[in-house]
Length: 377
Image: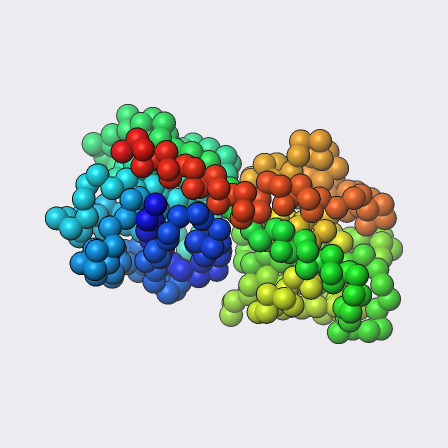
């Protein structure tokens, strides 16, 4: 088939998802994209630029069999701008990488319901809706009635059930096999050198998530201070995307934990990032928000052990048999399980991650879904 993938915010995990699927799909894929910045403007006005791209493609004879658009697109506006050009028979699937209803806003910012309504209108305009996790699906539909009840009339609550009926869950893919292979080669070569060579080899704890308040770095570093005070020995690598106004906890922790830090800061090179993952023994998440968990899966593919909250999307990432050992319920449970895992590491989960989340597997599921969508159109 000939597919269009429409991605207004083409950066970070949005871009990684789009390009990963494009590389591994059996179908011909044309990407319609915009630079990943000014997210509010992308949701408000990105449809105009992307409709211009679509018109040029249609004029050149590139007619899609199906369209896969992301949640950052104002889908009804985009379709309206293509009136008379794009046949109404072309089915459109909306991929919910995130949503603006349950996504936590930064401290001090008030929630603007405009963007959640764009998500909702886009779902109404789509033939099918894809969520990247069951948790994401349930969180959205659990909160959606409250959004609609916020308005004075014509809330059309009955439409929620109809959209939910055409909603599906398909995970995000990662380059799991490539990460696993690179990690195996890295461990065999044993070429990793810590920038802080005075630190002997000890289990390496990894943070590889965004440096944002919703990831709760305060809870992560409180755990490390507690482990440190209890005499539990470890090394620390803090990676992940960081911003100009990172939470103050990072600067404080960099000073307080300086004696165990072997890496600090964003790793721009993919080989260098995979090298860091290969050396990590325990990846910990303390986040208050997660729709899926790409960074954690990448660490698991490289051989790290997980220690994750028993909520959000994380229970979906691990086999049920591993939940008791690798999912925690509160700060004390987190501390006890971290201490145990650092002292008694279990076998890695690399092959299980490859089997379920490698792009070769996930892209095949997307392909099959879109093939069915076209057949039903």
